[in-house]
Length: 473
Image (cartoon, rainbow, N blue to C red; front, top):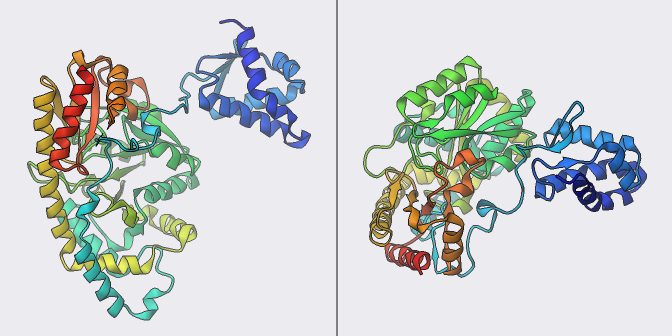
């Protein structure tokens, strides 16, 4: 590489920082350099100029540049070696927009298969309104005060019964914390990990795109760990040195596999060996169509698994209502963190959902959704067989999305996505959810994550037809 090229690029990218006031110039330089790496304008592997040369280019002291290099090396953005210079870290992921970072929908899309959204028209308005009227008429005045940060005892008791019955969870109401969704549960655990001196957490690769930012907000860095046909792979997990890992064992997101019994046992053995913790995200565990739902991992070892879920897929994400069940040794600090974060979840919403559970309305809603989503899954697999002959569909036994692996004739992936996007079809490839290249199993074939819960059967057929026409036109 031309040594002057990175020096010139660095000079242009960092020049605005040197105009900052002298007392903040060092921090401004670090921020500018960090952002240049994050944005990809300084790509992984780029060699930076020496501290002496860059200081001369920028007209600042060499010490200022040396301090910036040292700080970003400690953070992992840069790497250096004795006599080898300073380079942009090879493991730094560019913040350039990828499919998963873009707006979740195409404005005015003719067809939308982006996963993550249920059918909001299935929200049980009449039953919800009846529960609300009952709660408003009966709720004692004192329960409208500041709630227990764990949540109303009535709701926690109802949730414990639900989770034990439907998901095989060992559910103590005293260790359930009512939260505003899995995102808040993740953040709470991130803060608790940080308070214990834990600075890294393992995440599935491919996996949910939310974890990076949520853990970063708590000062914790994610470590991508590959997933195979049985679940998160144990050898990389053990080699990583992490003591906390996030999993979706009932229906891995996005591959759709269910963790094997052997992998579940091995994962729990690891947690015991390192005195670690597994965060189980049961984001769609109630939706299994061809056999009984796989029980929650937490039921096998409640002392090493924190379990979280929400009503975002079963009722509506806009309700911002979920739960976190934590091991006894973590309960006190999680509850205190919840107290300082928001003084507890809204009492009226909690009482309403408790009433909804007690009346059996939630079970009826789950059965209604399960019937509707099974029909849509079947419509999607039928449409794929008709319009994309030779495609392989996996992850269909549960959840609200499938993985469709298209024959090589529909590749390369970039061209396929360009054509279907131009045709007005919103879709995400599996590669959009990968943290690393290892997170995509087959680079030659186009592998799509197709969400179907929010799409009526007739629209599913039409959308897949449009996608096929665009891909072959």
